[in-house]
Image (cartoon, rainbow, N blue to C red; front, side):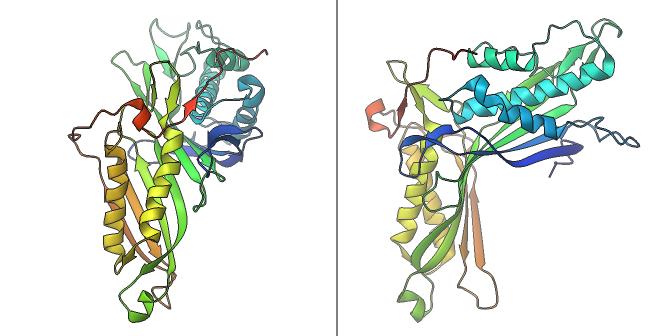
Length: 345
């Protein structure tokens, strides 16, 4: 739901099926094209227009879904989650700018058409016009701008085949829009989050004598919020190393190994040790320490309850601990050859 402290209203398209694959890590740790769903949440600056049964102050979610699904002929094949999130954000802000233009009349700015903007994006030359949520109008006093109604865009990419033990892997990114001293909109990217919900694992857990004799299910849900500035780095040859795709797959293996090979009596200690292992995985590599949240459910704990649940959240440290610089060969990564030539349109 929309946060009342930040936005007044929200429109969401939930789990839109994409008619094209997205390249990311599979459950087997291999780079493969996979099916994907996208959830797009658009938060607005103001309330929906009261007393009008139209889309004033909102967005046409039917048209938005069509434009998102139409990205396949524009981006062609071989694009990555970050590319897709950025393309979706550009589509949303472009629609917001179109709404302003329709309400206020022609503008002096040279706005690109939807497909032209996406083509420029593919070539790495995307105009900032659609992302800059302000529009100049000749009928207004010089310098006065009309704000794009959109405040935030949250894109969640769902990969149902990327997790071996969980329901899916979800990569979430938020583009926030804040106004500078001139009243112009300045987009900024929040640090991405990945989550692995409902990893179903079998382990020895419990204090009762019968619980020490057989494994029982524990359902683990993990959320990791990146704290390092850049999600992509490159080696000396300029080949990109996409950490965000690999992290979820290998961190899932850390969680699975610790829980399935352990024999804890309490969920509390299991949660603490699991988070410590995840944090250590990041510290042992070139990453800064992330914020980590782990939720553990024990379905067989209470006869007349669905589950006993504990949840532990460890925020990222304000001052990051020193990290040991490792050579690129010591880091578990996947080299990805990105296409250098844009497709024909």
